Amino acid sequence: MAAIITEKFRIHNAKQFKEDFGESASSSYIFIGRSFDWTDENNPPSPANAVGEEIDSYADMIAMKKVSSSDVSHGLTRYDWTSGTSYDEYAHDYSASLTSPATSSNNLYDSRFFVITDEYNVYKCIRTGRDSSGAVVVSDVKPTGTSATTLVETADSNAASGRGYIWKYMYTISASETIKFVTNDFIPVKTIGAQTEVDGTGSGGAIGSAATDDGSAQWDVENSAVDGGIHHVRVTNGGAGYTDGTHTGVSIVGDGSGAVCEVVVASGAITHVNVTAAGSGYKRASIDVSGISGIGSGSNGSIKPIISPFYGHGADPVQELGGNFICVNARLEFAEGSGDFPVDNDFRRIGLIQDPFNVGTTTVATSTSLAAYSQMTLSTVTDLDVDDTIMSAQNDGSGVAVSKVVSISGNVVSHVPVANSAGGYVDFTTSDTVYWTGNSGTVNSVNAAFPEVERYSGQIMYVENRGAVTRAADQIEDIKLIIEM
Image (tube, rainbow, N blue to C red; front, side, top):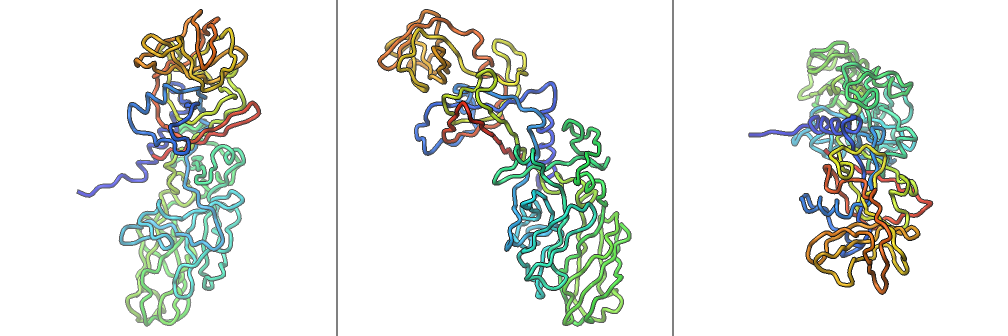
């Protein structure tokens, strides 16, 4: 039995996941962890999809920052418009037997059918440029403009006359969206919901909530989209023996109305078709070549109208372009959160956790930031460094408290507990003698306010192990997680 999980299923999951970040009953945090070295610092271990990996992530967690709905976006694979590159055209019928013209992809969402320009405008390719023989040519004229209704046809140097690329302006990525979500490999995408039929993200990012005109060019594009318009007709077989010339006023028949094109014949073969009126309402469409007035008695010619996406090109960018990635952003600014994020150490693990509890409770945390480490004040910190191992006895063993130092501020030591040699986890207490290499001190006090989060609570949704990221008092880390649904 043949079956497929459709792109819409993936996008539905992405929408639901994104909506979680805006719900009052849910709290999601980006966390950092692992201040000490990997076994091989040059080759961080790949995270395992296992309970043990989650336990490790909790165990060396340092701090976490809450993610708001404005810190989350749908995402797309990034395809920069680059002169000299060929691009695929939008089509409704790519398959294993009919692949895309530039990348030979067997489905639309794996093809290179949209681009971002250096002006941060995103365009969908409606028609790939072709030379006089019908071969795909490279694009060497950048699409420009932000018209909501007019397609952009470029005069690419290797394209035959009237056969350059045709582009549809979709939206522009704002400066704030660029800072938050653009990476070398991904760009953000959203659907505002200008048309009531389209399930946009509306007010506050909630699915299906009321959307209002935000004054953007994207709103105009969405609002002006025409459901069932025909904007491109593919030549599937040029045939032979037809009458040369441009045959105008050719109606496109089907369940819609108003679509008209002109069919161009050269040397007896159909070379290309220009759409002169897109019409509307088409979900099925066809053109009978033999019935075209004046085309003559040629044979084997066939042309196929390309059906636009539901609600029309530009109505729903997330659905149309395949926004099944979720981009999550968090900026760690200096020692924010009253020092929750230490600036005197590095980290090697980042992740996403949902609905952790406040320490000692089953109440879902809502604070902007939370420290996951323990903290105490020592009588001395002579020669004590971050990442050192500290113990409540000179020799490791049963009943001994063991920790890794995360941060040192004056005589205040932040640390994460690790297992002693007997496998136990023991807390330091006031008046304990603490030992480290060549030195010792006394615990003057244990700060009962730390950790601020209940360890092992919540659901870890994403883990990334990486090389060390060094923090500093005057430094900002911009963390961007890309999650594929």
